[in-house]
Image (cartoon, rainbow, N blue to C red):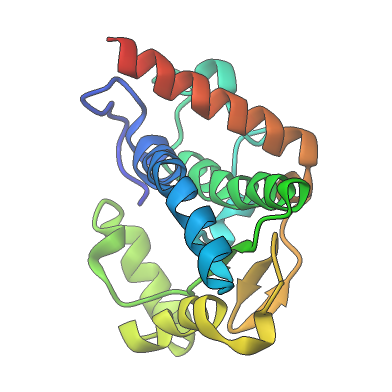
Length: 200
């Protein structure tokens, strides 16, 4: 989170690669198995992407498609926000595809809250300031896991898909996160990016 600019071994900006592209690939690798399992058992499958309220703090057009791996103009905080926006757009497009196919799988995104972990180790000053001024809203790990568990397991959310949750409640995400065209564009971009890496 908020890490300095660096590229992965595959040449992908680290936050985008770690927070979105890896999850996108893993999900796609598991999709057929999930579809078959949901169909054969009649049990709804659920995909939960861990996003963040930071998705509202991204680059000017939401996703820097043409500059995803460029150091120039890189902002550690906006890059993090971009990757978390991508998590929500991913579930939005997954939901559209599931509904189109009539698949018994849901996909939702959650913001776990501010949790006492070393996630912000690259921003020690910001971390100190946040802890001083927002100490009363920080969560421990079990509290932080609550929304994820709720969305993954609670019977009240049967059939609920394409939504964003915070503190066990559905919340309205940013306008970028609700943009269907942006979600489709990100899906295609992610597939192309993975395909180009695979050929190397």
